[in-house]
Length: 311
Image (cartoon, rainbow, N blue to C red):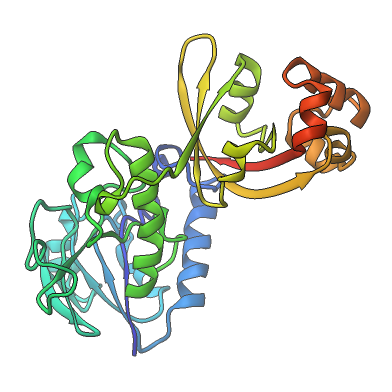
């Protein structure tokens, strides 16, 4: 038997698709895909803690009956009706807060992020070092959530940052490490642990490519392979700034490919389209880059194709 965690599923909640930018075209598709991923991951004897916001509908029993494993609810702000006597039996138990031991680690479970919890201020080497597993904030990075976003022992179990499936404690640690890095890039703060480490790059864009990234149409950014770009790694965050008014958007690096020239890169038709040059051939796309970089710079440095996904 394993212990797994999830939160903020929002079964039947159409607005969750737009609000959280979930990759589903309809609420029906979202529900079915989450159920599929749940049942692919969870075994019949696994215990799953659902940290709130299971569904906004009155179909909790129907949804729960389709999900494998034993289920305990830590209710959230959308689960008030699940505390009623008529909802008994949908979950093995319902509790506003739980404290438990997970593989020798002290863990507090609550839908809402908290300022402090048992062992929150202990050193990681201390046996009483405690973790908080929470939900509620989905994939949001806001000043309001600074304390919990900066705490390495506060772990967000939300579906939106955990692949839309329940996860183990170890998987929570891995997934939340990426969340913490994104928060460091967006919030004006030093990195976790006080280390000065750049985890994002600043890049300026004209109006049209900026808008294309916003629309999700442009998924590759082409740059020279200078020292700044050599420091990029998959998973890093890029902060794009629109040249005309300073507006910002963030994108995560999904892949990095090196080419000797823009012409060589644009010979790949798929990459050319993803970079925003669908209407021209490789030669014309390469020539368009002359507005930004000289032939001498290109020859000396080479070219980097940066795969991006808007965050």
